Length: 382
Image (cartoon, rainbow, N blue to C red; front, side, top):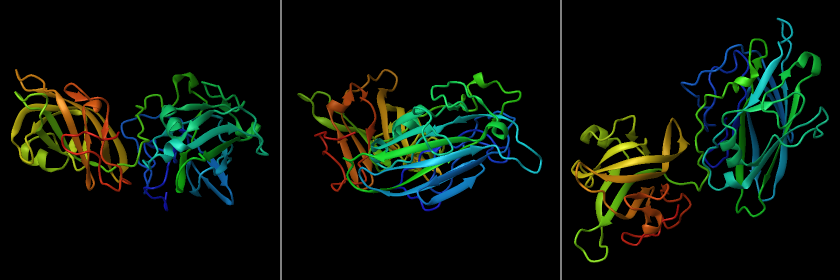
């Protein structure tokens, strides 16, 4: 994965296979190394696998893990990558026949490119000629979201197969695949793009291919493919002041996303609340930058994250505010989301009673103004 930066797209696909190749499956294509799934059981009976790939003048081979630098793509740029998925002979003899699956995982957050880069995967013959309709076709984001729990591969080149066929490479030869890509002509700017994949195989012997494959138990996540945003550093909640005519929008409380609240105030835990990170759950809503309780809880229902080294940086979140005990739930009039140097303010059109109407994001990285809106005015953009 060397040479890839945060401004690059990384999409991954995995097929469980070789015994020494994969002990756990990838969750994100991290920029430094492939991060690993934990707590997901993989089927036994793995065997050796050889994956060869070619893109332009670059070629490579591995026992399952593949990373390809597509270079800098300009609007309208088209290209393709070819793969040969083989079960090679070794000193121990011929490999056993195997079932194969392919799996996608979330791309690294790199702004709108994830929705502008189109991918399609087809079977081809040894000359590179298409032999099937697409196994999948869509934007990088759509493909990554759709096939996280696996897509069956078929030696008979049936793109609609829901159960994999048994690949007997020693008799029928390897599988040949072609991945086509195209960056939309109306995309503004140029981006360096990398594609990451893992391939492997499961021995046909003693394996039921109808069980859903090695990724059936993987919990799919809602990949974030929106604008490149700063990590959330705090959330401010505004409500209509009691007794004021109309709505005098005043600050109710502020929840910091840092390491201080768990340590100093007993709000959250180091595992659930930290620097630019929060897990869904219930948290006491402090008055401001201290531990004073407002008498309300903020209930985080959804977060949107992007890989940030070891941690998952939260860039957007959804929540509602509840009163403690007999305290009635408030009516929100504004929410402020701080990230980087700026603040994004969201007004009534983004709110629903005591909560947000969907996820609200921190300011975009490329926002020259450092944020949107102002206190009491709303104006944020998702």
